Amino acid sequence: MDRTTRYKIRNNLNYILHHDATGGIIMIALTIIALVYQNSPYAFNYRKILEVKAGFVFGDYSLIKPILLWINDGLISLFFFSIGLELKHEFIEGHLSKPKNIALPAMAALGGILMPSLIFFLCNIGDDFALKGWAIPTATDTAFSLAILLFLGNKVPSSLKIFLLSLAIFDDIGAIVIIAIFYTAKLSVLALCFAVLSIIGLLCLNSFGVNRKSLYFIFGSLLWLSILKSGVHATLAGIITAFFIPLKKHDGSPLVMEIYDSCKVWIAIIILPLFAFANAGIDLSGITVNKLFSGVPVGIFLGLFLGKQIGVFLMSYICVKAGLSQMPEQATWKHIYGVCILTGVGFTMSMFVDGLAYWGSSVFAYADSFAIILASVFSGITGYIYLRYFADKQSYIFQNLIIPKIKTLKETGKKLRG
Image (cartoon, rainbow, N blue to C red):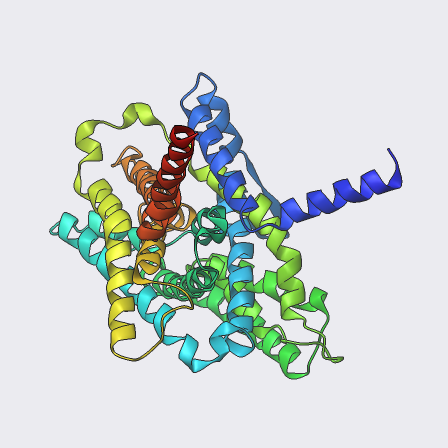
């Protein structure tokens, strides 16, 4: 193999790994593998792998957890760390640094939280245990929904990608607030004290303009350990650490985006797919019709598939009509509604909240998780078909039905005249 060929292969591989749709494709593949694996004769091996315990002991301190929890509490914290980095960049230097660009995605995200939670509440009213999962249908899986949007290519305006990403940022902020307030266990005062000390350490590093990534990693790790033991969910450590990292180095080169870019690929092709594989292995044999049509699964499905699109679109419409924001460039309300449908792809984020709400419970026999997958699949397919064929319906009919018919008639006329 000559140097030119190796260079082309390396460039093509690099392009594939850094493409925004790659992570979504890998997650879809591993989700299918997990489902097949769990419902095959090898299901025992699937669970056995996830239940293997690992950790470390340091004097009297020990941290031993199953691999499943290392993924859900540990690796996923890196995903939230990347969210924190993106939030900091967007609000200081990015698209959301301009006030006029904030109103539309912020209002849309708010609608995407309120309407699904209302639907879930109505489906489970009177059942206090079931209502613990009210936030499950409020989340959007950015990687999946963005991958679907990118598959459409030039069939939709490029401004829709910016709208979806901006909306997802506020959606993530909502998820962070919800997790911090509503899914916090009993608090350990001692662990919280250590967490505060770690935050003070990060604050000092930031105040003195320290650019060494290793020091932020050390204090961030200490913060993660402290929060893990405190009762607050450990993923918040990732967000907090990201906020204290300086936006730029001393020479003016970007630091936050440098770290974000280096993390992005690993999170997209390894961390999120691993999370999907570890949590999508649903035992379908235990799901009965009664279980599937009980309050929680129905609330999740309707909340994601209908609540998200209705809530996001309604608040977007109000925001634009009230003059608080402008429409994305070259986009119509049909385009906006298509993106609203895609926000119903909850998957990994909904699975994450589901795990927090009903951790250790087998009451629903995986019907809740299956409802998340069904709603995500329905939202993804419906959103794609709508944007591909109906968002610009007149243009589609003209280009694919009328023009071919006219050409056929012309050719027929020429043959008859000939």
